[in-house]
Length: 329
Image 1 (cartoon, one colour):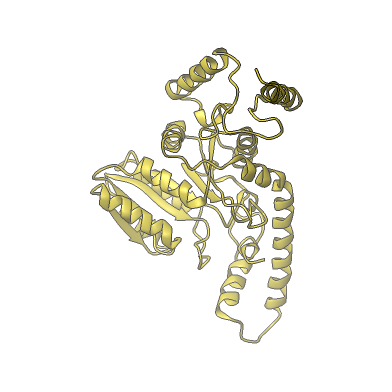
Image 2 (cartoon, one colour; image 1 turned 90 degrees about the horizontal axis):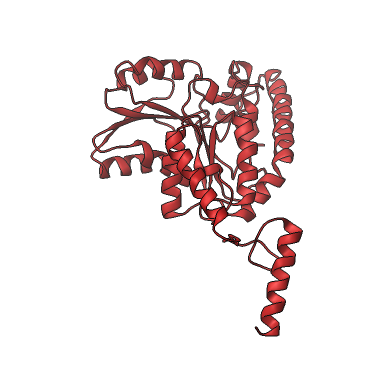
């Protein structure tokens, strides 16, 4: 063995001892880990099988073997997100739209049906319509706040109801008590229906009760926004207590890629506490603005007037009457 090769092996061994992780680089993290024999791989595969067939865990939580399946930094971020959302399973993606697309890919089946609210993010609606056309499925669009229309739109073949806590970009709030109730009642005729919420704007910090404890099946968020805190790192998150959905999503992610890489996972994780503090500060600032606007009789801009109205009549589910304005701060 050449001297340079021996020195490289020694440097890698030293790095493993320092970091406690069998990375294949003398100073940095790597996509692949040194398996150090077959035992770690066998243990990983057995854990994956137990997750898939045991029904009580997601294999998204397995330790890093190959970075397309998961990273150490990603696992640490997943653990924090699971606690925030009280989720049995969580996945992280390279963007929020990647998370949304995979959820639709998992839930939309040939000949099925979905319901979506009219003012959701444009690309979300476009992707749902696109995948539905490719699978011979149908989409019903319901006006925001039209709860009777939501109930009427559900069919026996409905697989998805998709909504946003606050619509993007018009910031219209949905009733987080009635929407889950309507979907729960609809299961008598549509037994496979799932309620999916994009909670990017509300954030886990903006609700008194986690959505997964309120009858929501899947929570999606863009980690690029408030959770990332700095608008620097693209990322997406799925949270659910349905491990079948989580494992199906993880299978798709493993096949086609799109996992959040370890550099961005570390950046989001390192800034998570500061992001929560910033969220609360923006809410306090918005409360001050709302109080001032309530004392004024002058004409406001349309958007500020709408926001102030919502803040004077806040969600019963919101921890702050100003969670809406926090998105703008």
